[in-house]
Length: 537
Image (cartoon, rainbow, N blue to C red; front, top):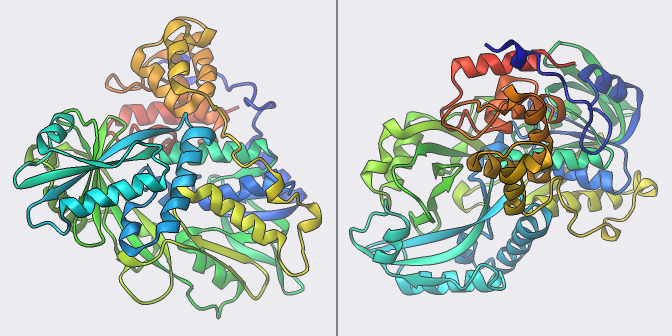
């Protein structure tokens, strides 16, 4: 192991100005201040709320028992989409609203973190839908997006096969075509954390809530334990928001032991495979009247899924089992050739939990709506929703905060309607321009970068990639690839440690990068990452 690499110095400043405080300093800050809003839960729903609340002028704290986006928010299908299947239920307004948010994120808010993706909807003989119906459906879908991704249409099997060589063409009648967008969910969530901090929020991951604090019967904060060193501390706040996703009812029982369950959970499992051929489009294959299974080119890999079945048990125990693997591969085989579905190609599997409103009925047809409730101690709990509308959900929750009886926060708040409608996430830039700069002169900091590394940095960091390039130029060993088959470089590990709140090897290898997902996080690499993390100043 390189001694120089192990002892790579901590970075001096945060891109937005000032160095990131240490965990001890953050705990001290959280313990000594009184916040307007304490958000418990660092999934995208809590992160977005913290971002918008901070923009509104509130003093906000955000804590999570694990890593930011460490559970369901980094276990999605990686899509920003309008929700084609919602047209089947007549939810035209919902699809139009989803498209609006999708376009806002991918065009104005985070074009450096999202990219357009063409989808093929194969129509097979004996399938649940005919070509005429699906052709009309994708046309209507694209119309609700104001044709911003082209006009939904139908193509021949031969033309589709040229774009997706692994498409199964037996009994294939036609292929309907539409457009949506794709993202790296963990990176999108992390950039939103950065936006919240840039707006004034104080954040801490790996901080477990051990109890709630009460004043006169009202919830006014939380008792916490640092999961890394066992330190205990507290946070006081005028209002507490429970945004813990699958754990929302667990926190509600801390407020009121007699509280009834408010949600149910649906498990969504995915498989990640190495590709055997180029994929220039994704497949969205109808399983039945309501369900679709996806085959998605992502991060030079192929993501298959997802399942949708009720989950009962500890959310921390959710995992992909043999039944899930069999179901995903079986459903994928309807439209994907067998050679792409070999188990030997699987590099990773993951499962997340959708939070659905309580009630009867099949989870696959349940509404993906956001529910906000107030407990007996005044704690607000928010659950549900979907990734595509994360900005809308954050604004909606902040609006509810302003309208609470007694207006406990309104005197400190700027109305959300007065704020910028589409504020960008950090690093906003045209990723092609950033990649070009990196390939020409390392972003003005030194030698040119390899094209794959330049493209990777541009599409995961935007202009913040220049900070990573500067690190690699100042310390040559940090410009080396982490794995010979991947574009990531060691400077990203140091950057994750010093500017992105990475505390564990999994934080770096699973969420700040995708090395674990791609099956490249070897024991040696993990050990070197842990050594770098241990050198934190």
